[in-house]
Length: 337
Image (cartoon, rainbow, N blue to C red):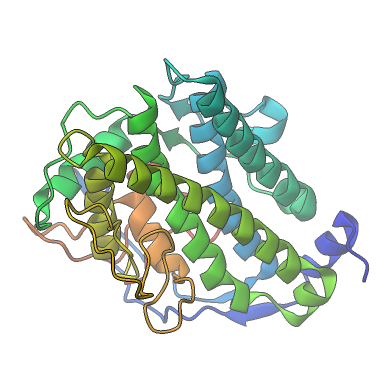
């Protein structure tokens, strides 16, 4: 099968499909994360989308992950060539201090993977590739901590208000936990939307390959957080519990589909009985990875509930906020429900 990027680019324009989110009413209220202003905007109806639209949606997320990991590993983000012409700015991010050689190596590896995902998608999309949108890696994390701490999560301490994913390796792990499961569920949810032409061109194979890499990243983060909690106890090492607060927030914003970290009880079971794991984010019945649709992913990365005080219900018509203060680039950028 021909898998060249030129073939992929040619296939992107040969198919449209109807997205599954449905058509939402126009004129919903938008409240950006960290922005107290309320703006009335029309919600564009769900129209025919192309494979290019789906890949550009994925590219937005890869820009975010690449900037997070590159800055954590090296202190610098994507090159101008990788960000695209007229790319938005990135606020925040710094090299994580005090890393061991092993920790530095794993950060280097994950950062490289995410950088290459950006390069692959940009190459496959060619002239249709969107440039990097504005990204926030400072206020977005502070907002996520505030929102996560408002939720009721049993036996789970609040995340400290000074949380900084670039402040230490342990805090970095919690920051990475924010992204990786979302990447896995997003690719899993998008895979069925790829056209027949796109499948023939190798897009489904490529998406499955990227999903697998994201799943390796997620499993690493989950394994280290769980292992350190088992070794040190959650009083001395509360970071897995902090991650569970993030998991609860993602569930509230993104339609559930979460597996909290477990297995670090003071007296763990020694009974040899197989059962669900906290290392794999999958449904308990069939052990199949969760999926999210584009709308659920938008709710998570924008981090915005409805503008009703105290609401934990995602809002329709949200076009910006959280990690994307000016919204995503491309046609899939406004929440439909």
